[in-house]
Image (cartoon, rainbow, N blue to C red):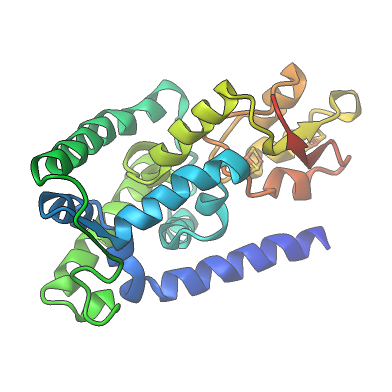
Length: 244
Ligand code: SF4
Ligand code: SF4
């Protein structure tokens, strides 16, 4: 049953990747800016808002189970078998993200606030790839996602370049501040035999064994994929639901 969980996750990610040419405008960091300059709430505005609020309950589950860029990076990992460094370097993505969010807010203010909500904004009847010039945008996005993964290791784009992850990271911090109960990992460190299978298999290259030893399972880069749960020979880690 546990192996099936990761199989299901992989298949969901493959479907999401195949649908990427249709959906990528809903994840666009540019269309949200363009929309804001005209007072329009675009599809990407709605999706990013959903990610922010979903993180209150589900953490970064989007990154593990639904993001189309995830499977692109897993394919890169088959070529480049290296984990990303992580640590403080993970903060890199928060700098440009903060500037970007400030620009979006400023543009909305300048355009007199929200005038209309258009989920299909700039797409061709909801299909991203059929909009003018979209093919080049998709090629650029795929190049960025795979380039960072190949250059910096597994899920390099998630670690250093993703503009969606910060919505969930910041949402998670706010959630913890408010002590909101949420989906999280729990562990029983007494049962751990320190084989490090969890750390070796973590797609975000986290020191999961160290997290278990310290009894501190919360990590802003944990995407709740459940891999560590499924590979642990002693059933040390499990999903739980609750506050900090
Ligand atoms: S896989 Fe399980 S037993 Fe092995 S180090 Fe991780 S938590 Fe401990
Ligand atoms: S710590 Fe476990 S659940 Fe979190 S990203 Fe790593 S393998 Fe997935």
